[in-house]
Length: 376
Picture 1: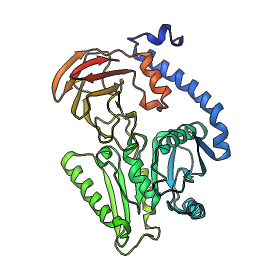
Picture 2: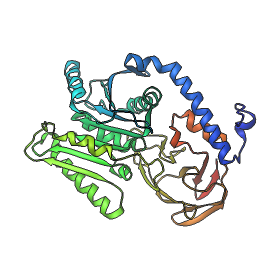
Picture 3: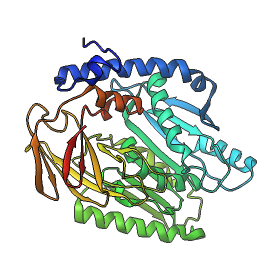
Picture 4: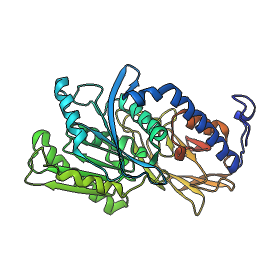
């Protein structure tokens, strides 16, 4: 087993073998799990999560036998929104009964606030990360089988959190919500379903749902990816008489691919530090910052196809390319680098410290800035 010596010594070492990198990641993830369990295990048992000044109550139920690969997790967000707390409490109670998976953990949080945008404010990202980590520890949830869904205001949240956190989900289901400024491009690798009443005209929900359906279909035809499932129940208003429950079976067909070969990332008004194997770096966190990149395992090539950011940071691991061989890095199809990229403990530790799950650890990273590659 590789010895880890802290910030000096081996932490600064580069050029790890794949075996050493895997052992280091395993060790660090185990240490993080023990710390999370000690620091936050009581929150899971008490049913109240914290994120700074915010608190989130939750309940969950477990269904079916646990698969050998770990359980599924369905995060189901209630309706309500900018309303008295009592109404949101009632909607939370309703959401607890709305859906039943054949297998998995059905997790129903009560929103931390009583605002119209309660499910997609900045604090939600931290809550989602904590839910993912704690459910993995206490219910053996498989990080590649996590699903997000919501009704009405919860549908608003799904429209926002599905693309913003697309690298967290295996699939998403939006019921009776409004997209606001959601970034559809981020759904390239996330199966996304829309369920809407044909008569649900408030805030033009039905019209916008039809627009999103058309856009997803168009993107799928033009570019591949963008898998979707759409249902407009013409005779229904805002309440769909539980016809939307078909979402549970549809979502369960999918597992997350943590290493999609082509990624499209557009920053939301709530920015993120990373997205799949892309990182924001110093210049990539403004809203509408865009990066489109791809890799080819057959040619050991990474290509940044499009970006409006002065710099792009990319992480790689041995599931994507062969790090024991030179990696060709291209910008708009033009080769700007062709050398081996070292696996480093520093890179592994940064991902573990950021709370990324075991399948999103990248031991090699590089930055492209002004067309020049800097190995990190």
